Length: 234
Image (cartoon, rainbow, N blue to C red):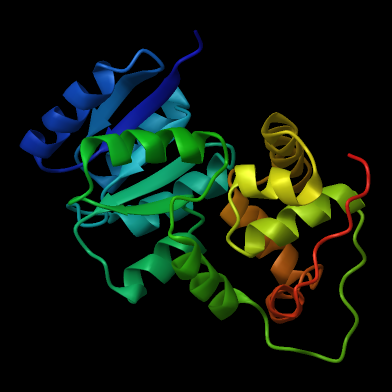
């Protein structure tokens, strides 16, 4: 079984030990490295290239937000999941703008953390859909008269998947909307990530929003009117 390779970036030793023990009990996960500060996280990512970095925000020296930004710049395929005690909007927006794939609080149960790790590894967002839409709407560019950038990277089907992801739907729900299997939806997301050179669905949605390929306001109108996506073949 291929294991999810994790790097733990957490300055509290007791917390880090507890997380490591939790993860090491799982057959599909392994901790490949541990660090206590942001600079160390960057160095270890360069050396180990883990699948997922579990990142705290408040650490000595370089904080988790800046460390995330630098890691995603040099290693876009590495997924960063924030695990923090802070729940204010300032940090949520900052880490997502730094291209973290998710945001989890330290009061989460152990199983929630494990599920979140698996979710971001598969390209899911671990944000509650309502929070995700609030974040994405804030990041959506102001309306402009200029036409959207020409779309060359995604197929119509892939764009449909991104649009439904922007509505806060999970893979199972997207599969139902498009009459596809959940595995096919997962494959579409992987292809989308590869074509856009991003590491998560949040990054993919932001990429499309910034280029005017999707519009959250229009998608909300479609939902309010009861209109469903066109079920063309995959």
